[in-house]
Image (cartoon, helix red, strand yellow):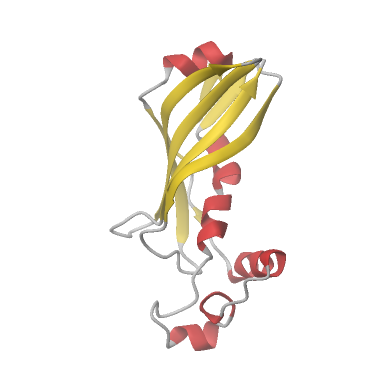
Length: 151
């Protein structure tokens, strides 16, 4: 269920809270191939399913940065910020990829609001994104993501 907050004041009320989870989405070979084309990273563990079967993961896996880039797709399932003129990606703090995302698996995002800091014209917001593969014992990606919202 999506949480809706009103502006920066609404965000500040949620600091320290886990905001919830997105729906699961399937990671397809087509997505992985398109990401490889966009980034130039055509390593066989991502784009060669036959060779990847004999590799360390038993099949092709998504790029770590593809996993991370799913944040903007999945975040609207978790949080909607109303009453702001715009929000922008500002950066990332610590990013780790503890376990792979196999092609064909289902991935979801969990988000925790860590801090909201006032900046000129708005606020800087840090969240912890945790990407999880359905049924996996460890998360696939844990990242501190920084947004700026402007009023």
